[in-house]
Image: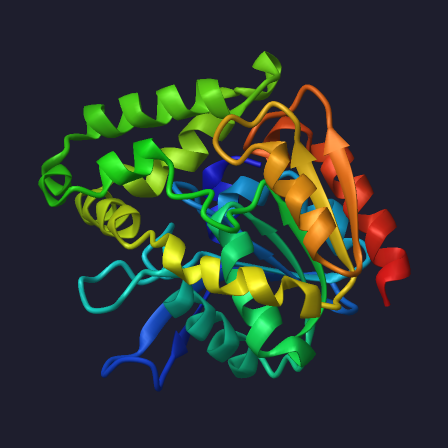
Length: 283
């Protein structure tokens, strides 16, 4: 799906009670059935899931928000962007949609957000699909630490394109999956001046201290969990998933061969099929 079509079906909702102003969240909401929440990571936005939303929506109500500061959600310099704050926003977001619980499918820092919510608000999380997720002290990676320096807020659009092109080459294993459509869609919101500044602010907010406290409590996260992991990932390696298998009580691992970090694009068909198969038994 091209970025224009994707954007045309996004909605917007105002989230109150977190900061002084309402926060605007852009999101996709299609399908019927049990709610299925998709959470992206950095430096992406919900467009990461553009090829799996429709297949999942054949059986579920699929809701894919842009995290605060990402994509087309609020990008102002008026709020925190940490994964702990993102978890606060997602809880309020689901409440605003009158959703009492949902299945969570989460990638990269979105996985960190999902685990924070699963730990402190377990009744909200029916199940977890974690894909190449941050955990323990596995993050932030060097590229994001570098990006988060305040001076990078003055980066040009050429600089952003170079950043994304480098990341795309590392984050996808299958050359045919690096399409112009995906490349353009992923970087479009970050070619705008406020998008560039917001992306830098997002990178500056990454803090491993928001996942390390979860380590001792992973054995209490009893939600059915699937680890859907690209084997080639050099940023969030499969060794992280292997550790989670040991530490979480109700977990299965599904490694995906010839796939790197951005699994929903690299192996979209297998990602969707494995997710649907898992959810059919997750309750």
